[in-house]
Length: 376
Image (tube, rainbow, N blue to C red):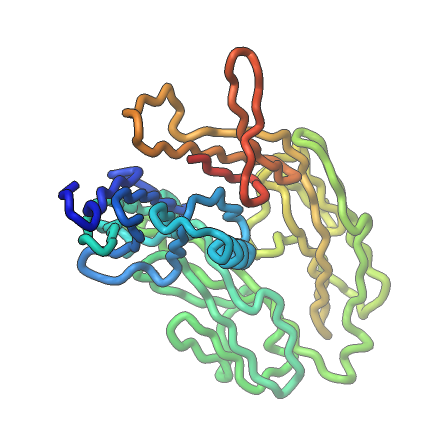
């Protein structure tokens, strides 16, 4: 610090000074500035602007980071209550490869300003191409109307998309424009399954990932003959290792009616999921956390496609990880950030305690702690 008759220049400390993180994960950067008068901290990124999704805030807050709308609202409330401008947090909820670089925390007061850098390295996710999505995921269109199916492959830049039709070739009223498939003036012959495929990064031998969507084209006369179905039970809750079964039943509709089960996001069924020979019963054996979610029964006949969704809840005991793992050594006066992240179903809450002389003291939090809490 440089003494002055009016005070001292800011001294800036940041944590962490270097960080490696995988794309898609949340990032938190912390900064503290000391000086007289009390400095104000701001965030910059060398050679460019802060990411659009970056959320800077004053004071230190244990973020409830699972819901961005709640997060933004709570930060606004806390900003109105706090007068601390010498401590700052920068939160990036879903970091991207392009967000890598040097971030600067600048502390400023009437005497001057100083800064400290944080080097952020973003590693490409291991499964960049593992998920392909199609919107809309359920496509019902009236005869004579047009439909647009959009395929969203992950990756930057996005890989090339290939559209195919399960029943064979495209018709003259089918158009592929980039990653979009257009069905113009739809007729009953356009009903069926459409598949979006991408080739994984690397050579031609790389794995192929895909998603599919069921298109149902109905007319007023065919609605009475389209399948009507129901699922029992409507939902099920099991513990890890237990099994669950759902039955899809056809109540009416012109025969033959074809039944099949899919995940709600159109991804392939996990390897511990089995469907019986007529497609009516789905069984999830030895349930795992990845089986948690929604399942669709899709019924189709020459007059249309009907689908119904059920949910499976897989309860999982809480598990927690702390970063850094410790033991942690710091100099007196330096900031330290401890992050506790938990998993489980239902989503567990997190609290911090201090153990001292065989006594446990619960540390208070300005924000209700969810499954992720940071203590400074």
